[in-house]
Amino acid sequence: MRPDGTLELWDEQYLPGYQEIAVQINPETGEPYRQRRYRGARISDLFAMVGESLAAYQGYFVKHPYEPFRGWFQFARYLAQGDIVHNTTTGDIYTVEALLNEDDGTFQGQVVLSGGSDPRETDRLKLDEKNMIVYSHSHPRSEVSSTKFDEGTDRTDNPAPFNDTVEVSQLRYEPGTVGKRPFDRERQALPILRESNLDDLIDPDVGVETKGWWFDHIIQFDLFGKTNTRLDGEGKLDGSGDPGLVNWFQDFMMRYRWVFLWNGIQQLLEWQGTRDEPVGNIKNDMVHRPLLYYVRTERISTARVRRISQIDVLVSIGAPEELAEQSGCPAPTGQIDMTVNDFGLYNALGGL
Image 1 (cartoon, rainbow, N blue to C red):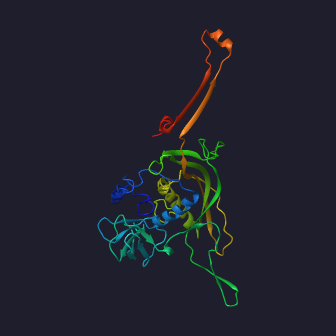
Image 2 (cartoon, one colour; image 1 turned 90 degrees about the horizontal axis):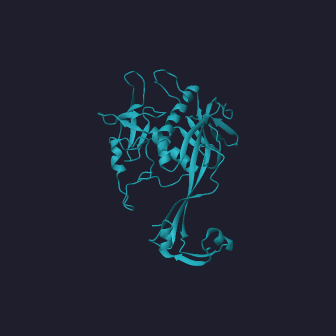
Image 3 (cartoon, helix red, strand yellow; image 1 turned 120 degrees about the vertical axis):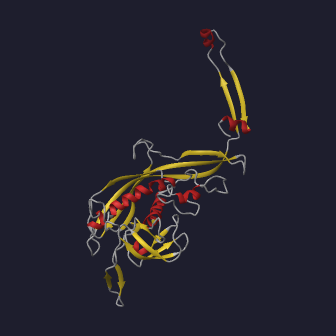
């Protein structure tokens, strides 16, 4: 997560404009922000990260190298002249003045904006809600059509606009495997100590322990489109035209994978697809494609614990008499009473 509380963009590690952000120093630690991954994330965190990243992905804007207010919304699914675009960095509000075709006559998201100040490379733009795909948890399931009630309480349904939709749900989860493959038989049944250090700034006799517990999940993304073309694309060999929601979403997950891993997800793999299923609970015909992903999360817990300050050892040593006759050496006998304490013990056990 960046200093402003937002997730990283899929390509900001490559853009020169973000290099200033990358070297900002955290005044609390004196180190650069996010020098290493420092936290775990649960499956609900991933669901939220996907939602935030989808909005950023659709509003991703590539500036024209020479002309202000001109550029490309490369991953927008819906754009029309007169649409509203929000600059969440500066607060400016733009209007889409024109949609421009490329030299080959195809539309690839090139627009001319108006209003406010010319957006910078590092500004985050967000499309209006009506111009974005619908992303939600699959529970509870709601009808696509709008529902109204008249004065006699008789229900009437009127068609409502439908945008491409992605629903997410969890199909399976269990303690994570310690084997080489997901869902191997050997599992991490209990949390494992990840890190232990001495919190001597507060209490020299108290340490801080961090434990982690892996979990393996299968999550399902249900992709819905109004037509086969909206779901699977136009199939043009030159690559022009609508790529389809399935290809679009798979590319999104691939590009943002490092962002999810950077923010605490341990592993994310495309698992499999399942067969297309008809959608029969709405008026209009719909097409539906489920995509399954394997996700490993880590449940992190941190606790302050009292460190060991003293160990009393009482050892009795004895041997049968015949041992001396056999070996020719005196048999060891006697008793040892020893106490190890204070920081000597802590250092002996590998402490600071």
